[in-house]
Length: 374
Image 1 (tube, rainbow, N blue to C red):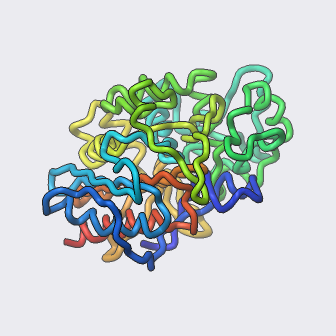
Image 2: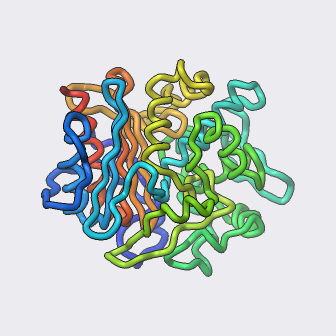
């Protein structure tokens, strides 16, 4: 894959919390394989997942699950160092892949005519919206990381739990922080990854109701039963425990900026359903919205990086176009990517912070490259 990179929320060890809450995480090579407790019954597609699961364990994942859509088939396999081996129904925190759900809700609103791509960002009275000197921030700017907003709210880290950094943040805190927020650049001029921006997109679409919006407008129509910010009891019983540096850590909680994917849960089964809808939108009830999210809506003039709504667009070997997003919290790392022309998509979920930059993403891209090159 090219050097085009997508930032996720988590990074490094807990020393610089502002840096930790998001960094570029691109694909890298050179992960050493080792034996693990991989569960991959049978041959064919499932057997092709096995070596990548072993490499995920070698890279430090206590457990890992991978899934693929290829040749009209969907298969999932899991592996673990010890203890329960995850499967397609094991619950992980999804991280920033959740931004593509928010972008899909935005696209549905555009298709319905309730907003436009270039509708200016607006929030209720008491929430001061930053703006550029030449024009306001638009919803398209937020959905393509070209708003000029900083990565995080100015007052997020004050008083934050270093292991659960969004949990304390309230709407009152957001209202207090927005007047302190200066744009780093003019809207629509450059790519700069922003959890704040996607959090505000969610609030602009459904103020104080983002989680319900994502369930109603995206997860439910696509049959993503386990993709939610609220753990049902049956989901809690199936959830993997997140780890950082080998130690268990709490899940992230967030009621204000959850449009950024900070507190979303999902499963490999749900993500394969989601990828299947991306690959064949004409079979989905959200066809027009999905098509809209995949179109290029911004190209960064400095790097050439292309952005759909939420999705990032890159190139695999042989010039094949890949659409993707990764995610991470302090306890989980995920990556979902697809090549629409080949009808192939992959997802990787591990229950550890992402560690060395791009390590787990590299495995997802390598599998996708192998499957689409065959």
